[in-house]
Length: 224
Image 1 (cartoon, rainbow, N blue to C red):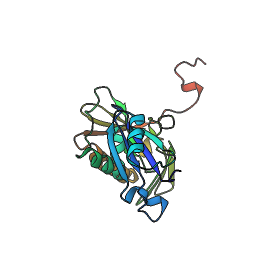
Image 2 (cartoon, rainbow, N blue to C red; image 1 turned 30 degrees about the vertical axis):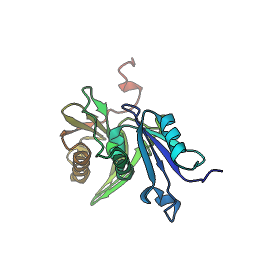
Image 3 (cartoon, helix red, strand yellow; image 1 turned 180 degrees about the vertical axis):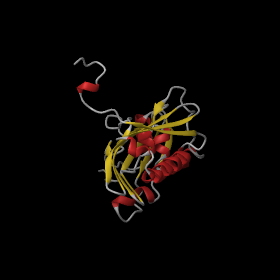
Image 4 (cartoon, one colour; image 1 turned 90 degrees about the vertical axis):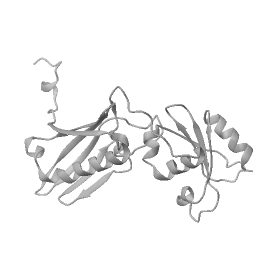
């Protein structure tokens, strides 16, 4: 008979190292099981080995979910990363910066679907949620509906490309009036602070560009 306890196996995308996190039953509500002294074990070479070790050490929870993620993605989750560090017996170490630029907007904006600043309201529209499962996770620029003081509203696309030296942001804004609008300053300051928390060693650059109008007339392959 299974216990029905919550159980996750976290697999690190870089090298396949896997860890189990098993509800201990100490929590008062299902939502707080990760904060209530769960059992944690690892590293194991793969998810199957993690499940085999769990089965030897604990009663059968009745099943588990596998969450595959990069170390950077795991570090944005303070609860899970602390548990994995506990299993390792040392702080979780971030991998070396990539030589080839990679999109990290989905990491920097993970867990932040709505931001409200004085004079600005920002709602993420794509990706709508930061899923950890590889088949659902979207590693593309983040898209936002933005409303600024004075009734200015529109769509902004934010790309964050990370390479060996730092993180380069590009903000595609609707038109020239947005490029110097004071209402974007709090968002830019938040982006810088967020990046420094996740990638403290990175140099940061931010540039604003006018978004290309949509339509076949602006398609390089279109001939009128």
